[in-house]
Length: 194
Image (cartoon, rainbow, N blue to C red; front, side, top):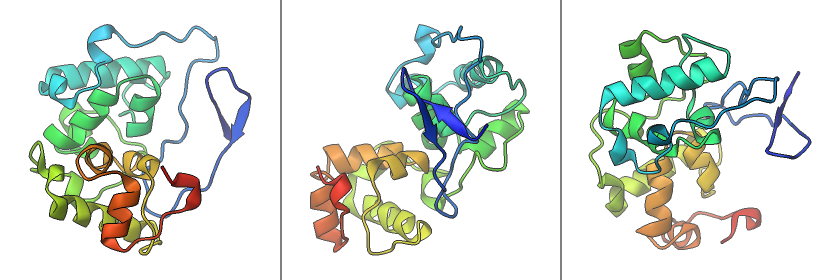
């Protein structure tokens, strides 16, 4: 049907995705209107709560079933849309990324659900994004992938690419989007100014 429904709002049009950026086909909630929030243990905000693969498996299977798509790996956007941001952050930080988790769990990945970016995958230790050089590399690589190498990616673009921890580091550790953009010599669209 080509759109997605926001909480309590009308239909929002699909926006074209930038090349190579992760996007969910759409956030799907059953049309019956009986959408259930995730179990409390899956709705934490800290990635460190989800170090165990069993909990990641439970979250992925729960959401796939809720979406009416058993056997499919939910995307980062799908997990965040239902309040599982901790799970969404833990997958690339501690479990090797969405494709790796899907393979370990025997789940299929929708071709639009995963966007690979070398920095967010294997072996990024906790706190790595607190080092300016690591964060800088991730931001510049994402800007390049978005075909806007001279523009600071928004927090939403970072999260959509599976770089929620980078977005958090920019905001909390490195002084925010404006400060990082200035330091890197990137433009910041006025719509995203803090």
